[in-house]
Amino acid sequence: MKPIPVVLALVLAAAPLAGQAPAHVPEATPARHHPLPTVRRQAEEMQGWVEARLTRVLPALMAEYDADMWILSMREYGEDPVFWSMISPTTFAARRRSIYVFTRGDDGSVERLALGGTSQGGLFQIYRSPHPTPTGEDAELWGDEQWRLLHEIVADRDPGSIVLNIDDTWAFADGLGAGEREALEEALGPLYLARVKRVPQLATDYVAVRVPEMMPRYRKIEETVHAIIAEAFSNSVITPGVTTTEDVVWWLRQRVNDLGYGTWFQPSVSAQRAGEVPESGPVVIQRGDLLWTDFGVIGMRLKTDTQHNGYVLREGETDVPAGLKACLSASNRMQDIQLEEMHPGRTGNEALHAALARMEQEGITGSLYSHPIGDHGHGAGPLIGLWDRQEGVPGRGDAKIRPSTWFSIELQATVPVPEWNGKTASCRQEEEAYLDENGDRHWVYRRQTRFHLVW
View 1 (cartoon, helix red, strand yellow):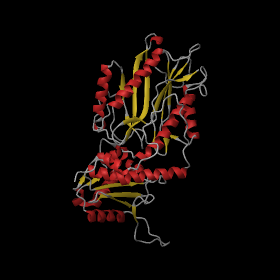
View 2: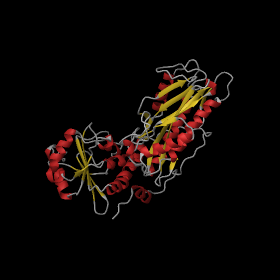
View 3: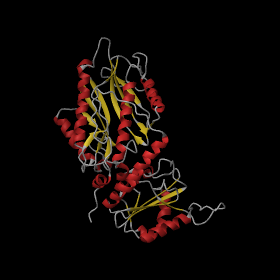
């Protein structure tokens, strides 16, 4: 029987959810801060996401890639990257040695076993040692006992194919450490070792594919990011001639912390003026500066990555110079083109080349370097260019775009500005977008079409 495509599996299995309509929020509507719920409520919501991914996404992917068994083995603090996408929110590391065995049944369901570690709140069937401890409790599996049990389970299921996470292109599919691999291969033995195959797409797609239940929360997190940036690029934070770019960086860090979120990289803030290359290090913000920030937060293990632009009005100015508006309009047009060219089934490189060709036809100068996002900032899935690889990205750019995935649409437009005596400005933007279950593309919240203003 032909495997059910993962997009169909999600559509059939997911119940309608409130707040799922694609967002189109006018920029005139101020973005609001959305505090995260209590940590207990967060854990309940996140547990639901993990369960949905294990019960709906994983079986569909194992069928799609004809994987009979998938084994993940890792030790504490040497976790497989996939581990973080299939564990309970109350788990913070692997336990001693954790071995997860996923076996696809004839009916398409997937058996989930944990040899070591915990059941992750009931998501896995856990095996313990039959040897009692002095307190009378079952001990945890240890050493050779753990490997012997693995061999028994594999022999009992007798899979035709076994997937291990070994790959030289994708970090997300290369989570089996060198020592773990040696021990695991010895445990499998020659018969089952001959059935091992590498299917990096199983790991990368499992990490990349989103379930619809995650979007309402992600949209609130992204709106909060917009609200924080709007506040950072305002007179509430910036006093022209006094405030430095470094001051704004640390204000962003503090604001995120105060709201209960985290960051996955140090924010960047810079100022362009009259076409000059932005200086490195702290710069005092002056009137007439074109401001830029690159800012990413973490909320409930989900990552964002956003770049916005601001402008500091000169004395007597009431609006942004027309040349800078044209720069932002050019980057907005690039966003339109990039999103339109991200057809499901295309590779990242194909989407890149199609978008660059349209930019050339329209006379737009700039570069494209979009990436997946979600469980990781630079997430699993196809790269659509790199800032220094506009010809395409071998390997990671050859992966195909899938429905039910999220992307950061990242790019920059270079435009000559008459008010800067024809010198160029670079308008760098980055916004979160997503492909829904049908492959249609949407902005998660909205994209910036007007400059943040400092008076």
